[in-house]
Image (cartoon, rainbow, N blue to C red; front, side):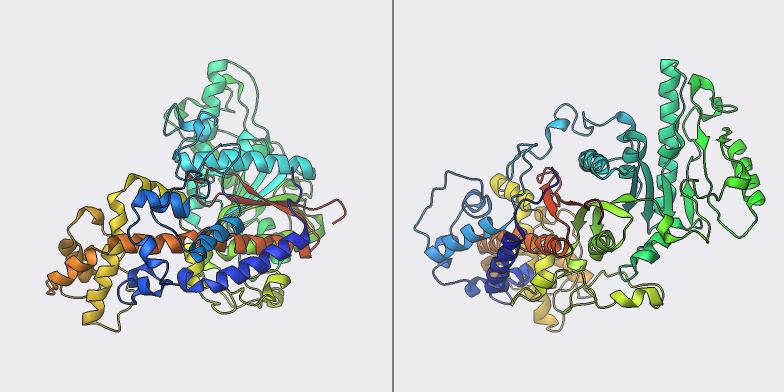
Amino acid sequence: MFTTSFTAEQQRELAKQLSTFLSQYSHLSDSYIIEFFTEDLWHTLPSSWQPVLQDLSYPQIADLLLDATHEDRRYPSVWPLTLLAFRATAHALAFPRESRSEGCRVGGSVKPKEFLENHSQSSLLGHIFRKHVKPKKQHEIRKLGTLVKQLCEQTDCNRVVDVGSGQGHLTRFLSFGLGLSVTAIEADPTLVTMASKFDGQLVWALEKEKQKKNCSSHIPAQYFPRHIAGWVNPKASWEAFIRQLKAPDHVSEGPPTLSGPSKKKLRGSVQQGGLHVVQTSYARSDSNSQESELSKQQKSKKMSGVEFVDEKCSSCIHSDSHEGVYSEEDSLQGYPNFVLTGLHACGDLSATLLRHFVKCPHVRGITSVACCYMKITTKENPTPPGLVIPPAPPTPDQESVQSEFGYPMSSWVSGLSGHQLSYKAREGACHAVEDYVRRLREESELLRSHCYRAMLETFIRDTRPDLRRAGIQTIKKSHLLPFIEYARLGLARVGLPPELPLDLGRVEAMLKEQGRVVVYFSLSLLLAPVVETMVLLDRMIYLQENGVNSQLVPLFNPNFSPRNFVLVALKRFGQ
């Protein structure tokens, strides 16, 4: 299951083809649709393309351009070979996004089969794991969690580190649902607090189920996830990362405080229904003594109406065998092996996890789901918009990786002419092709939004030529507004007078070009999966250069979860 799908030589050859193709059409991937009128983008297309594209209906754009699986192509006119070659090459070079197990197609049913009975609840995920979780996330944590479990079995690991864990939805499924020992690390302390709260609600739900079944059992201690509030610095070494995982400070670890409508009924040692919740560790939050910390925890437990039983006495809290808590003197070599996972790890974080996987002997496997490619650092743009700046200057153990960027990671791609990917190209790779195909086939009114914004850009620059691509943010239901009303709202957001006079003749003329705007955007969108393929292939080649084979799996339904690729890799024994 976890074998490479094509050889190292094939990977390198594909990277060469991608680099050549993308550099040839970079004028498309680098363009901004809001500059359609100001930069006269339509006339930057080959003159032979313009007449055959300008009169296409929206469903024709979907069928003839964007949907690689559409077989019944009926052309209203003869297309030039260069346009046919452009479309065919884009489809051929991009990794297939369809999930075989889902049987999905581009622009098909929005929701997977598991939501046929109930559009908001997966029929394949236990109800206790659906609370607070949107359908998209339910689909993702079920599929990724199952894959992580399989990878743990392949690598003989029972421990998982979930980076960028958010509210802990995947963490809870891995731990309580699949019986794995999970450490979750999240940069936002608010989300960590929520994750711990939701852990408690899940434990309460489990207790209720035990009461109904009148059975006697306890939740094994290792099921309680360990939550860490901390930012994973992309410039830090793997040793610093392990120390971050081992540090007892800023850690919230199980069992959590139970919460639920009937928590007052839970008394003593949680004996109703036979559930016996066990605490095996604690987290220091200050420099007080061990006894003082335990005293505070015991007080907290009694206030919650639940008295958890500590299986270890205070004298062995810091023992090496005690899961999740380590003393300052523990060596890095004593840290247990684990599988690393990150569900939609943003920007450089995905690249950082792959580097830790390669360099850290304790990481035996990885499942990496990336997103926000525009936030990846590159040599040409080391500080892209949205990049999180380290809170402190680099320490000595971070200096060795200061020159590493999120793209490219591999030596091979770094040496290819034309491998560079602009911020705009990487931002475009985050767009949902399937969603846009659906809009085209439905001839949705949402399709006018790009034309509106491009029209507004012309009037903004007429007044303020220096104000280029100003951020306006989303105007609610803009596609339902007349353009004049939309323009007034938009002008106010960039500090221009809403009553600015608009040439109604120009407005009408530009509105008639909405079809061209949609065609041009579709041409650039056709390159989005190709750019994503380049980024992910570079990561596969990086792993191969370091002696690790990998597989790219289209795990999620792309109509439901656009960033649906999971990069899976494991180390052979001895690596």
